Image 1 (tube, one colour):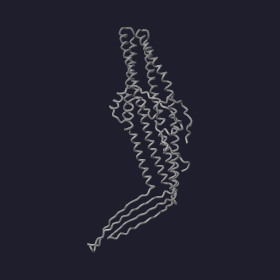
Image 2 (image 1 turned 60 degrees about the vertical axis):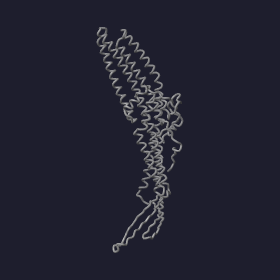
Image 3 (image 1 turned 90 degrees about the vertical axis):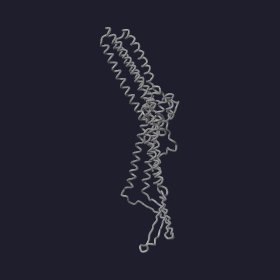
Image 4 (image 1 turned 135 degrees about the vertical axis):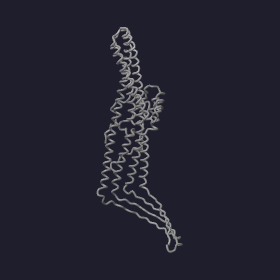
Length: 441
């Protein structure tokens, strides 16, 4: 089994993160558009529909498995009409009714093990559905956050484009008046063309994110556009939540880990079922019938216990046990790998979140200073005290700093969403669902 730290995380936990739990976290965004998209995705996402269908199938399989350990009862009825070819007037009508029942005594627990395996599979499917819900919610949030970030970047590029156009107008006037060389106007025109291309590229990226939200939510594109247009075009800022679970407690918080655990339990039970199939079966059968013809009515009955013992199967029964053990080993490897990956996802999300929080204030201050420097440089250029090349350098630095500040704000919110998903999205395993594995089947 994978070794999971039992005491604490190795990555830094968020500071002061105690205001909201992950299960109610989306409300803390205070963003009506995001909440509407989340609800639509939970109602209409195809991945969730597949997961719900899988639950229904698992429940049906469980009912079939439970029926194998219970008595079965059947009714047979027949009507026979006969006569004599030498006497056409002579006919006899006979009827018979029989009630048959059979019951397999589960002496060595084969049926019980199969039912336990099917129950675990049903629970795994339910956990899969919960995991799909968490994944869909996180994917909707990330695409929504990226869209709002894209809008901010698009505004920055458009501001840059407008700034270039103003500079280009002044440069052309100065060139016409003979105050500056024609090369200055060419340099500004090149910058304006590059700014226009950046606007076009970013606008296409925003449109792509809208289409991703359409696919996730199942809404029409006009409906999504309406939702996105109603809310302020700003990056949402969610409340922090407490990261209280220890690494060893992830099983109780991550539905995908719970599903893997249930599948491991099912594989374990199937080993016992395969072993029990090598021992005798005792089946009780009985019937009672009523038959009558021409007012005679005999009522036969019977009871017949049958014991079957598999003496020779050319190694098939032993091979089934080996196959069940191999399935268990495979499920155990999957569980170990998923456990390690789950711990890694939380640790990485914590590190990235801490890094984004620490960088955010510095990059915001840097963007503000570069913007102030560009404004001062622009005044000096207009007064003829600064070369155009220096102005363009100041403009480029200001725009790059603004974009970095926007991106780090996006990274901070996205890492909160990543942490939300890594911790299971507020899902909790109920105590009766956590059944420890036995040492032997």
